[in-house]
Every structure is written in C-alpha cells, then in structure tokens.
Image (cartoon, rainbow over all chains, first blue to last red; front, top):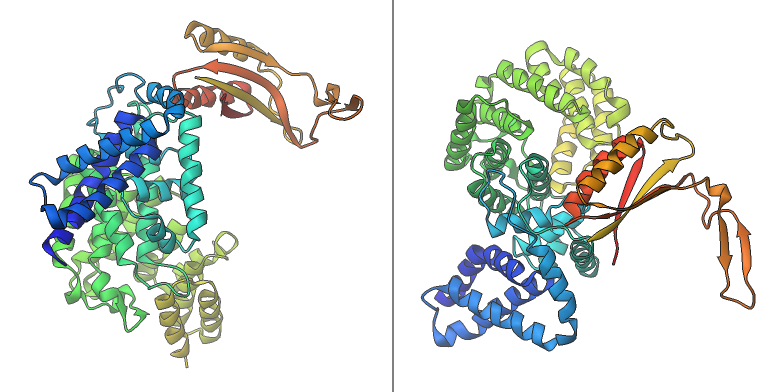
Length: 407
Length: 107
C-alpha cells in the first residue's frame, strides 16, 4: 500500500463516524450526510496522490464534505422545504442531562440503534453510518443481496425521518435501555464474525469481529463509566484473544483442546484489566460483565486442568439471576459437569429439550456429555442432530471428527 | 409533530373494561403537559359501515373494512416534539388502557 492509500485508509477509520455525525447535525439529514461523506473520501482518493496528503486530513474532509452537501441541497432546491422541516426536528433543543458526554458520534449511534427500528435494520445502519462499511461489504458479511440490504438501510433512514426519531442524547431515564439497544447490535456483529454462518463463509470473519471491537472501543471511550459497555468490550477482547487457537486446518478447536500459548496475551491482559476495573466499582454487574468475568476465569488458567470451575459455576448462578434464559442454563451445565459429573449435568440439559431442540449448541452439549458417560449410541444421534443444525463450517468439521471417534 | 396513537384490542383476549377512570386521569395529564390534540374511544367494529363511491354508484357494506382478531378500539392525536416522547407516553398509555398501542406519525 502506498503512503497516500494508507493515509486515506487511516482517515477513513479515524474520521468517517465523526464526519457523518457532524454532517447529520449540521444538515439534519442522514442521507445527505452519508452521501457527502462518501463523496469527500472519493475526492480524497482522486486528489491526494497529486496534491499530497493535507496536513489535517479530518479538517480537509469536513470542508470538502460540507461543500458537497451544500451543492446537493442547491441542486435539489425544490426539496428545501422538507430539509428545513427535518432540521427543526434534529435540533430539537439541548440534550437532557444524562451524565454522558454529548458527542455527535454517540448521537449518531443512538439514532442508528433506536429501539423503534428492527434489529437487522439497526445492524445495517450502524455498520454503514458509524462503521463506514460499504453496502456490498455489509451485504457480504450477512449473506444478503446488496439490493435487499440497500433497501433495508433506505427504509430505516426513511422511518427515522418520517417518525422523527430524534438526533440527540437519550434522557438519563432512557439511557440504560438505549445503551443496551446499542450493545445488542455490537454483540450481534461480533458473534456473526466469531461464528460465521453459511456454507461459503470463512469460519471466522476477522473483519466483523475487528469492526465490532473497534465500535465498542469507541462507545467505551465515550461512555467510560457504563459497566455493561466495559463488560462487552472485555468479553469481546477475551474471546478475540483465543482466535489464533480456535480454528486449526478448517476445524474448530474446543476450549479444552486449544494451545493456550497461542492466545493473544495482550488482549487477555486488557480484558482482565477491564474485568478487574468493574469488580473494583462494587456495582452489581449486568449480563455482559458476568460473561466477561466467566471468560476471564477461563483465560486465567494456563492449563485447562487449572480452570477454577467453582468460580465459573458461581458466575453462572449470578448470570441465571440476571438472565434466566435456557441458553444460560445450558452453558451453566457445562460447569456443572466439571464439578458434579456428566450425569448430573445431563439431567439438567435434558430438561431444556422442549425449548432448545432446534438449537445446535444444545445437541453439541448433550453429545459431549453422553460421550463422557460412555453412551455411544445416544452420543452419535446427538452429534448427528448437532451437525444437521450447525451453520459454521469449522464447527461442522469438528463435530464430524468427534462423532467418528466414537468407534 | 403530530402522531396518531391507536389503541388496539384483541377479540380473543380483550383488555380489562374498568380502565375509563385511569384513562380520564391520563388525558388530564396530556392536556396539562400540552400534548393532547384529540382523543376518542370507538364503538364496536360491528357498527361500522364502509362506503365505496369509486364506481357508478355508492356501495355500502355493513361492517369494518377488514375483519380481524385485532381491531382499533380508540385513538389519540398527540402533538409532541419527537418519537422518543411519543414512545414514552405510549408506554404509559398501554398500561393505562391495558391494551397494545400503535404510534404512527402524520405526514
């Protein structure tokens, strides 16, 4: 990559969200903001090789994008009335005091992740407007057609405008619910990268996990006191740290078989630091903080045999109280198997059949417990069911090997 | 910004019928806070008549334009600054009416 290309890439990474957010504030229209930002970068790609990289790329991009936006508004003069109307809504008074910093990028994120939008629309809009991913990139990541994704974004923008979803910081009263609406989006993007589905997809979509971490870091930087944001960042880092050891020759490697020396020590250290930081506050942790703590216990063991399972079980008990979903109960059973044996765990897992029969991880857990109990026939049937339901190529390969080893 | 706020009832599991005092109290609050434009409860869907005069002559049909399990039981029109305010009030309205609420902006 040439120096100029590197400068454009860096500017895109550092400046895109700020640019779109500032343009949205100024022009009161997500469409104009998105288009003007994209045009400014296209102009940079054209001009910087000849003119040189400007001393302050952010300021150059802002000026260029504002000019593009004004040009468009002039071109579409007849639509001015509508823009005027939208602007009034977007500048609806000062933000209500909520204790959070009033940052344009946060406003933009809260708008894109508004709970009145369907989750797939929030994901697409956030990756486009805040993350700066292109429509083809997002479409590829979620295995949907570009036209369908474009439509999803267009519809979401139209709803924001027509229903007047405000471009401002949520009130203190709304903030926790609005932050969790943002975290749902970020975690979903991360998980799609971490366990990518689809027959043609890479088993791990590094681009998606990296983007989710980058956006979560951004939100963490803007809301440093929010425990759940910190928890989600720690959780992502501790999962990402294990990536180098998680897939080998196209096959998923289970946690107990991973080469722990291959884990990214820096990410582990950062994740642990964030978990300790939350523990030190003494504030009761939410779901993401508890999940991060569980992952911190796993990543503290240099050898799988050193895993502190009673600590993990205690954390799962805490998690069940916050989130009593069958999936949490299923994961808790894995810790139960280590402490009380696979028989006790299997009894707990079997009680979830009705709720989780269509979920591949239920059958994966059952298969493993049945295998350890020496019930080969039943284990094989459970592996078959898990393979049928699993969407990730590396996981399917792993499950097939495990099944075929049953003898 | 005005929103049509629809109260949706369900024939198979209707909301409680003792809500009127709470609704009146809520209306008083909407008026005091300057959000109230209009409110009205609707008679049973069986009392509706559909009028179609797009053809040669007017055709009257007995009943609502669409028969469904869920139906419109009443409406409000609110004038509020933005959707966040509308949604917060709609949350309260749903509790007060013991029914689902749809919030839809006017153009």
